[in-house]
Image (cartoon, rainbow, N blue to C red; front, side, top):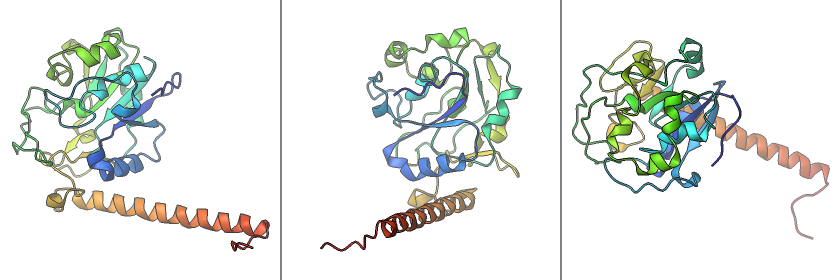
Length: 252
């Protein structure tokens, strides 16, 4: 997988085959972003060979730390879990960033997950700096991020060191306002810019009534309507081309 586009700023959405609907809606919510949107899937990263384990609950648990490498260590790149819904363009954050920082995250003070089990039945880890790495901005050119090579990301243990950003000094980690990682179970903000359905989203049967769930359902409905419109448009364009060729679709 090569997504190096020079100095163009990018966003990588973590992809997991169990949450395709979540991924599709997250991507659709970024359709007007000025960022280049990328799918982050382990099978597309030739260099990725980390064994599944400690602690890993999604396909993108560790692939997110490949983002500076995949960006050619150029520009700024965001990573985001697929269970997000954007209501604003994260690109607007970049002018506020300080190049002396290696990464920016939403620092969730005092956050402890309400449940001990994740939405898909996997145990919930209540770790230090929980959910900081679910939405991150990497300063790809920062010297401290040069350590995030495929060899390091595949082999460094323990895995929690990554999610706790332990390769960085505290002063190298900047803060993004919490409205950009609005935890559905924890923050009930009036005007969030990005909702994180960390407790479970409506793409799971048992989470139809989750907080902000109606916004996600509306976003999925809009995506479905757009796809139907595009399919109809493609059909009409194909029919028009066939008409120009005087072909009626019947075998002679």
